[in-house]
Length: 200
Image 1 (cartoon, rainbow, N blue to C red):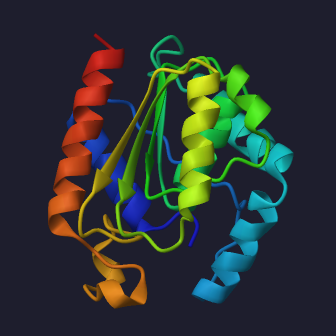
Image 2 (cartoon, helix red, strand yellow; image 1 turned 90 degrees about the horizontal axis):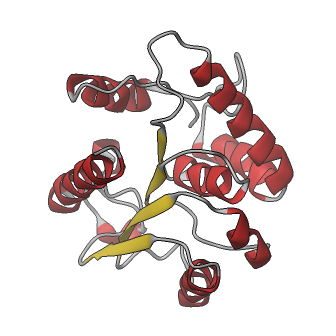
């Protein structure tokens, strides 16, 4: 749905941990989908044009670098859903960052050779029962990272589907997207440990 109160809340959670947090608005100023159908169409525009997505997220990274409190040598990117896809594309673009964390993001790999551009560590937090990701796409993603000798982790949370960190997703797994408190808590803890590791 673009930059919402959810993302701002996560930024506040990061700030409380002592990090400088910056929310990237990939869709652009004033572009706010009103329905999930509109959001899907907007996200698809970028998912089907990975160079455009990479350009937008790198522009956001550049804006972060210009923030006076930011340390350009100690940067990580996290993303939820479409944002998870976005931070993986940031890594594939060759961005000079320490790590990325994808929460229930898209793991498809349209250009597997781009894995060789990844210079950072990767953590993927994924719902084991997420129907939006095909097993073949997950296997291809793993192969991409393995073939490129990337330092990566993929954690699958049993009983979790898509959007497992989003309280607004409801609690009906049969819809394919639902909140899972346990997976939300565990994935946030995994992210904290990952950030501690890459910034030690």
